[in-house]
Length: 341
Image 1: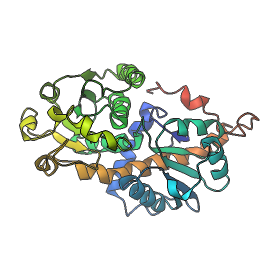
Image 2 (image 1 turned 180 degrees about the vertical axis):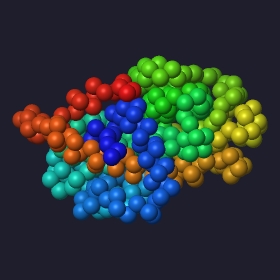
Image 3 (image 1 turned 135 degrees about the vertical axis):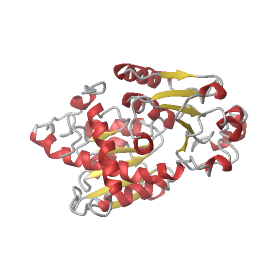
Image 4 (image 1 turned 90 degrees about the vertical axis):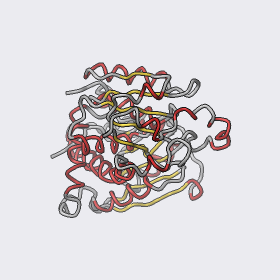
């Protein structure tokens, strides 16, 4: 039975190399036999809260359908439908009523502040620093298209945002070399980049920074782009856009890559800015496969987490400590962040 030891999925670093490998294989299997696994119901009679501080299409649809297909129920909350409470209080209220939480939020610290009090699984649906669920779908898409991950090269063009952070932390850890090209002033967070390099070194993968998009895309198996302005920064969109002009994924740039290079984007996209309509609809475009794979990758994630809960309880990882109000003991998974067994 596929199990994940950590009940928390905030950055993706909680999972070992073997757990990520098993998750990707399970996601492909769930996709292949989507309507034939009616007996797989780890969330039967359980309710998962889906909280959205930001608008959502793919995250809302994929988690709603995923929970339901795993036998569970969902309750959805938006920022306008709940009061503003401290995360420490929010999780202690929720865990008395629901069996799991997916939160799509702004500050990543909101999720981190919940951990010392959490008795239920917490999944990061997106934060300002990380988008690990998207990276799971991207890994699945690469494995689905190429049959393997180790040795692949992916080029990312654009803002050094949460999407790039998750790609840097998870793809090289699974053997995918990453080229990234970001404008000066829009580079990835240095501490996250340092962690990514350390994780990559454990498996012999490489992370390379380029100042030229034309150089970055050469000899790569996939080119990945994202919007130039993330949610929350829309007021600065015009001011930011001129820094990214040379990073547009268009036919001229694509000609410098291999003829079979995959075209990737986490969506939504602004056609005519970071990607042209021609590239979005190219025969090698995987944009909408990535979107669908959010469902299957997240189902595999929840399957592994919920399968692992009984093991966690059996090992007495749930501690009744006055300072944490009986929270999961998260020292176990924190100490495994560089485990690749």
